[in-house]
Image: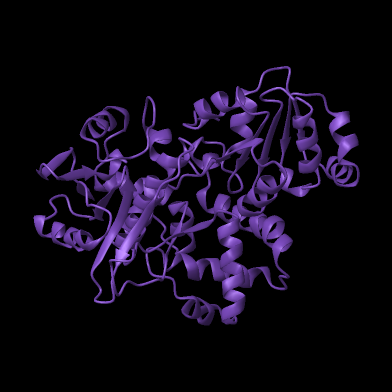
Length: 407
């Protein structure tokens, strides 16, 4: 098995020199524990709350649990014992050294609520997603995606080129470390086991689930709608559950970082905007598995080829920010006349519109939609088309054509 260097490593090390507590959140099996164990030295003790005895002690007597384990310490799956947060806070207030506590957990929203409540101002919270294409195929340092020309030229040097066939192979193969590293070689068995473990260990903790197979069907119904505006009723009807149940189950998928939403952009000067978010998965390999695409070639020519490509681009865009511990102000634009822009990034007081196209030679008419943002109270900056073009190019000084492999 090959260890894959994570772009978040430098940020973990630098923040450990400043904060007594680092909390890494993210979905199950994305490598949170692996990267911390790779970075830790021999002085740091490791304890996992997957161990039922350790978990029981941490919940019954968190003070004794912390006394039993020498610091610095890595506590894995800390969501199983939220009682620890108050006692870690007391230790930090007593003067715990920077880097004393490294924590991981796979229920991001719940964890952040607890951590922010108990450890406000005392913990650095980092989000780790599935592997980015830069981590898998690229070299050098990753930076958040921007439309700065010098930064784009640098991305050409640090990212690995890919044509349309290779891009769909990346999409179909997925971004889970267990598969990419070679630890697991049977993709079908891996994703089947992943879903079973996820449902048994994460979903059952959050909802009363009488039929696990029904929840698996629900995830599949959601996967069939990536890149679309969320329609809870349609998903509920596909599975045969109530709309309220579908909403609760979508919240579970979001809280455990399986799915995420892209919200519509709006402000006071833009009228008649839609308010419905669009649905995406963090791992397109899981989407391809759930929607029964048996090869990347079939996927590239299938009915979902555009939607899953959009999902891949949006997820990769977010990862460049997550891996630098930065927030990404990312939306999509759509009004009630069905005028749409795939993505809008707000950065340095400007709105940057982005279109996603499967074409190698997208037409300049795609840029017409960008003018929809001119009525916004925030000025419009440079825009771009993200496509299958092999090299960085431009329509004019304000509009670039950027290969998807450069994200």
